[in-house]
Image (tube, rainbow, N blue to C red):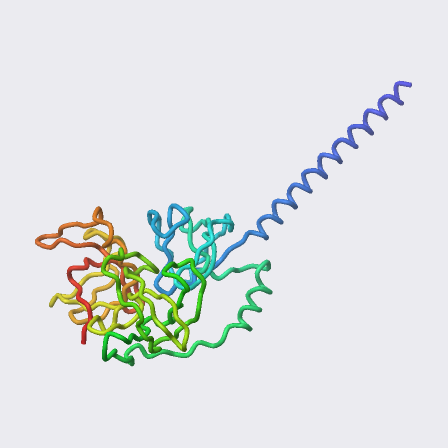
Length: 302
């Protein structure tokens, strides 16, 4: 009888150890599986992508993410929006050790979950034609305008970024101006540029677009660029401060692509350096993005 109890005890102990071992093995498998399914993406924005504290274009900048850099997607269910003609949602992501929000229209998804979607998108997308930005048409009167944005502009049914798309007008397409800039209209930041809505017609269809992305009569011939006005050139810095690290030096007369000038709408961001009062704006020169003090730049009118 004594041996019988001993045998039953040993059998029970063996059964308990097997159950615990199996549980640990199953838990380990789940952990590996979750790591494999981690959703990542690559930044698809040549001028870089701003990581923001909240899911909107006006929130505080957390960091600037380099083009082609990889990010981890934490949540894809942010607010839906259309930015620069791209429809998408604000994603919560993790990059450079920081968490924040970016607009999904400037991400290229990676991983098995998106392989079929990416392939289908590649099949449907037409090949982009190379554009020579030095070749463009100047308006001859105030009733015509020409598209200055390399990616074209979307005409919308109402003067609102969220309104229905009417038609896309490509680079240097001629637009008939139906309603010019309303002086009473408040300038807004749209796609990193400051502008106002105008009503135009293209290929017989009427709609609204923002004047910052078109070439208009008696205005800048290259509205998305600015010229270095100081004889000594300007320094692009990695932060909007004179103490920021130097990114690149742009010489006098160099043309800089404007990436984001919206800080000029915020009076709290106006600073004084020496005898000059102005704002730091984000620009791109020779493929490198940085900040410059806007008083050292001027519009290109020639």
